[in-house]
Image (tube, rainbow, N blue to C red; front, side, top):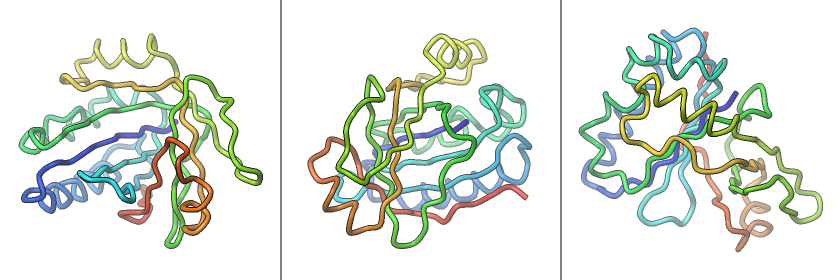
Length: 191
């Protein structure tokens, strides 16, 4: 299962402190929560204010309600000082891939949301379609466990993710309605 967290961050004065906090938070999750397997952060190209995507591999929806996740500040309690700078903060759970893809140097991640998994892409571009486990499963479970804290937990029933080289991403995906992200951090894996 893949958990994706989208942020638009609007305060350049605190942005580096937020990144530093986020890096430490991800390392703590990877080293202490058994059902958390990988993490990678991305920055959208050409977006002002800055848009970021965090992509995590988790064992199941139970991760979100686990004591390990909640004890590490999952749900936003540990990042409260940065919340005023969030113009967007969404969390989406997806099925359809056992592990999040690794995006390496020189590669880009193209992401587009869709109500159905039938959007067409240029020839030779093969999307990995991820699907939400459904609002009943994800939203209700998050609310029941108090894991939301005022955040919109789900924004789309389907998300296509496509790993491309940098040149193809810019040329092929221009004006397609999604976002092109470059790696902001390398993929980190649990031990």
